[in-house]
Length: 110
Image (tube, rainbow, N blue to C red; front, side, top):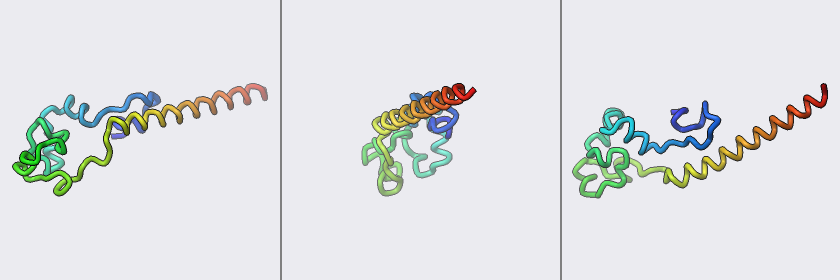
């Protein structure tokens, strides 16, 4: 998770993966979700990564109403990831600036 969330191990803040797109690419049938999130196991492949987009009739047929039996998404990934990348860029830039400032001050002491 740390790698996928880009919160550790990466110095390239612009690598922020979509949990929906990444899941569809690496596990198109949603087997992992079906195994570990039993509430979602009956959803069709088309909605397994975005069950909140399933029509209410599909949710009822699957026995899982989003917002009642399973929570709605906490954030809208697209704008939230863009905001996060902007903040991470600022943090990395500040870190680089502090490192170059400390290098020049330490080299001036020599």
